[in-house]
Image (cartoon, rainbow, N blue to C red; front, side, top):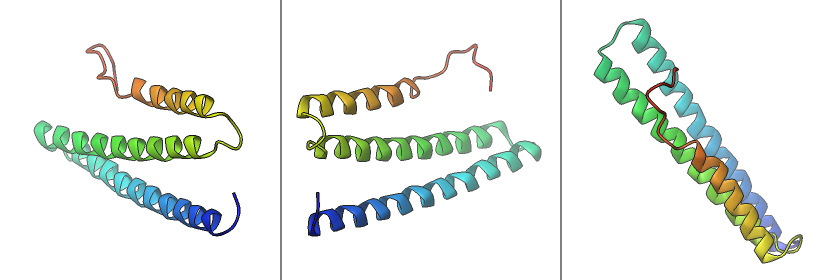
Length: 109
């Protein structure tokens, strides 16, 4: 892809990278807050609430990245057929979705 469409696409990709990096920096701050809460023996309910918010933020980043990758797979038909691109996109989604499952009671941190 060349011309104005390619420039628009690369600008959009740079914007997306900035968004993801900013989100990850916020998540990093949340994790540091969790560390302080544990070190300061904060109430368990408060820690779990913050942990849940941090996990949800990570999941949102993952969904954003999957959406971006699926879009790229499906737009990149010059390299592969549509069916192959769809299959590749689904495989990427399935890999991520496996990590969204609730851990069993026997899992340790």
